[in-house]
Image (cartoon, rainbow, N blue to C red; front, side, top):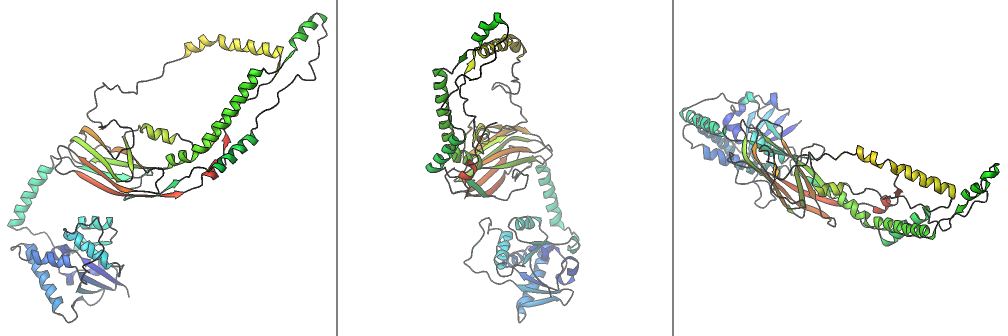
Length: 492
């Protein structure tokens, strides 16, 4: 037999038909339903029962009478329905005074008090859920991962308006009219894949620097696979055959003379080879840092929408991080220079080709090479005539007037900071959301990046700003630098 435990919200007692009249089986699949009256619901019903002669007050008094019936029974339970399904009403167990409470809860709010009670009860009864017709409660419960069963519309009482309701309706109409003149901004966050975020968490790879012995070993391997040339070519033993024409014999012999590499050429090659090996060694020493810089960034996308029927004036978007992390931020398609530089760092050890050892040559080869060099440079004027200046039209002058409908960074910093802000004179309504790119940066040597992201959007024609808070918990996960470095290769 399936059994379900439900904590009804206050609106179930105030806005629905009598509990024993409800068609429970149409909306809930269970053989037995146990309704537990939470302490916040008891308090709210008790407070509302003396609220004049409105329907809400009458319903609160009826619910209070139901609670008295539960209290008056021997086992403090009241059967509301005997079968299909069986429904029983009871009081929820008393909460312990000392208990862990989720930090996101505001226990001055009745909804959060009920959520706290249900979350504590679910430690022993994981199937417990909330029954509510309140969208706000459903939203907060979803974010705290507490299951909610929504009250079907068919359970609700038909609307009833008394004098007080009419006055309230008139006041609400006035408030709605006033709010229609306000902007309504909304914020949402996603990862690079476009998935909505509830936290910035997970792991980031951490690469230790190569040890001295690993660096030496890889450098020697580079030397072995691309050794320095120690001996240089002498004249070939098989000189070219002489032509049969006697008049050209002496000229041919002169042109066939062999010229070995000069000492300057050999010295230059030896110096270039030493520098090439040293450059490879430094690349190996820095490789762990390069990998860490590339991988210690977590990109987040922030979407700002204006869902109202009018533009938002003088919009300010403020982004802050608290804790051991910093951030870089941009708007539009242009990433900060530091991000572009970081993304340009290598993910593998890629070495330039080693220098080419000088070789000897015949005189006729040297003459031909010089002639070709001359031909190559004769056409310089033609090449210059075809040269076109690069297009700088996309670069905005600092004196160019700003577009009042675009967002601009208030600060000029292009370095990791703890806060950044953007402004827009007039953010048009019902347009595509504005996208801000954030890069959460964890220090290279840190084992963990912890903190909190706070984003606030406000406007001159908004009464209350929009705030989003998101926890940050990024852990370092050690990877092998040597495994990647050992797969070094020569460029091209």
